[in-house]
Image (cartoon, rainbow, N blue to C red; front, side, top):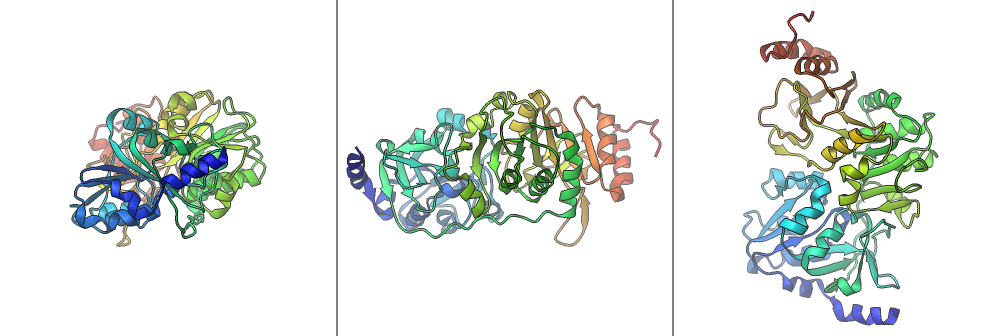
Length: 446
């Protein structure tokens, strides 16, 4: 049987230059996500710039360079889009070379099934196994639903891709592939593990008392989750679980400390669940062929009805700013796109509905701009900022000055609580703003 797969493989094998000949002007192309970026195919497609017009390309959390974006400053030949901006894609947005697509991740598969065209999908996969399957690796969260809807499927075999085990849709069979591309790839540039700051550690210390044995965690990416992972690794908590959109080195720290067992989960018992992964080489080595971890599409991982089935589900994400009404901006600074909605709203809803569940949104109380001027992350009212999480859904908010719960709170209670965790240098100013907006109790004493 394997020989027949090899024969089919040879019949479908193309050079990158030959494979991208299927792309026509006006087509929609998908690059899927993160390590799934088709490096060789992207390079070959960019070389066709002068003969193609209005080719639209979608990606997600992809590191640079993306050649089809870089080669066309005027957007006449290629127009690049992202579902969730990486640091590199954010810079493309600043240059007018990337357009963000608003979304919530649990609906990502449905967008493709019901509303979007995919003329050609190009996705990196691990080498074919003896059963004829290519593994989507840490791209499992988004790849399969896109591939299913594509008119033409091209896989780029990347010898560096780790093979992962999954719940479903972690692989594609050669019979579902139209063309195969091979070629040497540079080793991945793994994301360095950010060093937690003193503020990250203080925020983490504020959260830990709310966790119980058997809690299942969803963590975002960045230095704060790593600080929390370090703190939990040294805590007395035990039998923690993982059900997370994005797997980072924080979970590896918990595993190494013996805290991450997944034994108490109501669903997927004994397995850590994730959709995508970003982090160090050690993290990817841990995920590779690990029966204790399962990759799933985000339509499952991020589905609030799935998340809510897990007792003591704890969601921990970050934001850019919050206003005195409790609205959260987590994806933009003003109108400048920084990242994306991602799964913040999915996990806010799901964790809030979990028995014993809690959803935390974290931020430092201050940020310093490029001119050295300090600004409060707690604003009087947003004016042009893009709201990621509506005030009706926000649960716990955390800064280095404390933790508050906004569920069921009135406008004056929200203002009072939010000002209590703002940086002291800005509290009097925020109180005046709250008074002007009629959301500050007249009987309050200052």
